[in-house]
Image (tube, rainbow, N blue to C red; front, side):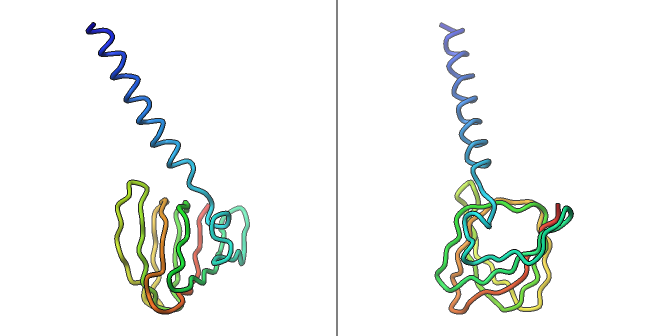
Length: 123
């Protein structure tokens, strides 16, 4: 009975890890999930430069970025959702330059104006 309990625990832990890995790996390239709000301006073997224009109320599905920089052209308010379901709001202010390590998230423009900026993904 003890061996059966141990086996069941191992199977459950393995199943939970599989769900986490699958959910994380299912996060796609932002160009696949939000091509209407993102445009590739330049891509080579070292960087990809994207322009984003996200209208108020627009939600972009979960996607991933490698390490990246953002140059904010117009102030915008976003709600970010992480893979674990946690959310946070953040205002990105015009002329800000931000660096982020690789991450997976979804976002929504919760402001009243279109958010516009450049996103530079490092390869």
